[in-house]
Amino acid sequence: MAVPPDSVGIIQPQQFRWDAPFALQCGETLAKFELVYETYGSLNAERSNAILVCHALSGHHHAAGYHDAADPKPGWWDACIGPGKPIDTRQFFVVSLNNLGGCHGSTGPLSDNPATGKPYGPDFPMVTVSDWVRSQTLLADHLGIECFAAVIGGSLGGMQAMRWAIDQPERLRAALLIACTAKLSAQNIAFNEIARQAITSDPQFHDGHYRSMGVNPDLGLMLARMVGHVTYLSDDGMRSKFGRELKSGDLNRGRDVEFQVESYLHHQGRSFSSQFDANSYLLMTRALDYFDPARDYDDNLVKALSAAQCRFLVISFTSDWRFSVAHSKEIVNSLVEARRNVASAIIESEHGHDSFLLPIPRYFDVLKAYLNRLTEEARDAG
Amino acid sequence: MRADLAIIAELVAPGARVLDLGCGTGDLLEHLQTDKQVNGYGLEIDPDNITACLEKGVNVIEQNLDEGLDNFPDDSFDMVVMTETLQSVRNPNQTLDEMLRIGRECVVTFPNFGNWRCRAQLSILGRMPVAQHLPHSWYDTPNIHLCTFNDFERLCSEKSLRIIERFVSDANHVNRPLMNRFPNFFGTYAFYRLGRPHAREDAV
Image 1 (tube, rainbow over the protein chains, first blue to last red):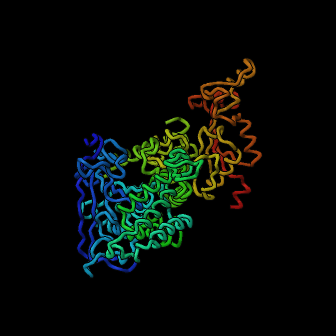
Image 2: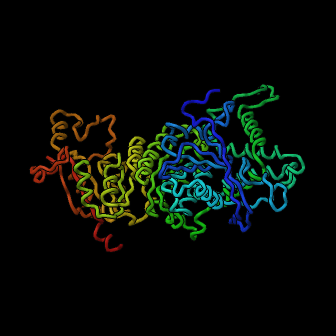
């Protein structure tokens, strides 16, 4: 397969090693860790054109391009990152990593615990969005990036961008919060808990020690992903994508019926269970649930965001019911009250929370316009 | 910059907080941000206008004025501006109240339906006026609450709003002598700078 001309091309993942103790928010310390990351485009002489892309719940470092010429699929945000795309790699140096606790090459439950010589498994300590941000600053140091032109993320990625703005105000000029929230609602947490229960109640889970037993809680992971997936789509989106089309069977006789939407969810669930580690998934959903930057500031989001110095762009999608437009409005209102520079756009879309991954024309126009402006500012900052 | 925007820019103190309702392509806010270090925000719903604002680095927030402004606390801005938008909001009366709740002062500009051209078209031709400052046909106009300067001033007086300043101009935003004598007949646009009613000011 030929690599398309607007792709960043064949990409080689890289490894960052941190060989000193790294204290986590939960009180535990990692003796050392590694992060797998990719970069696209080139860092300018002034080191002022770097963009950090933070991934969402099930994402990873491979955001754009292909790993080899036979790779059937590009990275998860290839539509958005590349020459001439909204995050234009002719202008920006893009960094994308797999977060700590992940299962795509960064230190996580699958990695060996140096204390025991065996994989961490369920004993991998709890990580928070703050921990991720601190580990990302170490990667930035390693790459010689003092200040990012922007930190960008959708969903859980947007929460990292928000945390960057609050915790590291000197180290970014813009934060792009896409389909994001300042904290999860009870409903959000409830869905995450259903997903976790699906995994932990799978007989193959073995309290998280499934690897040493040579098994995997496939069924639990599959169910978790199916529940998650329903919350990422919208009623309208599912209606137009699947309707009540049958994959197989006969509704009149009521036998062997499988609707298209069932088949789709089974496929999503199955492919996820073969790619994602259950302990990692539990860890990531916990990080989502606990995210609440206002908590450190008397439960006052305005106060929390007052610590930020950068400018913000907040994007939401009309049919997103996981982190709805109202969640983004709360962030925008708090930023206005905190007297921070903020712009916002509400994108018409029927694709629910997943919209942030899709090349919706107006969404990309907004990103392009905003990032073009940042290009000019990066030049001035240099 | 449009002449009326230049006048507004003159009024705003350096470093002030400004909210621009229906900020269009963000020209006023861009000017205020760069030349007066103003902490300004603009509300807009048109996607193209929003994109234009983003390209300028203007703080544009996608929000429909007709859905209310209750997300902005009392006294949170020094100046609330609304240029050529009053006539297209669903409830101008309430919007004015909201503007003076959020800001101590506000500036409103709008086209004059009492301008002699409008009067002539309606009285002589018997047709809904279409003019340089009101270019839409009756069936596709966004202007659902047109008024004359007199109408507007009557509303202000009913609400006991203080008219701090008024500036009347032609279609090119230039003031001409005759307009000052007969504003409601010769004026095309008016610019009003309004303050809260005295009673309310005391209560604050």
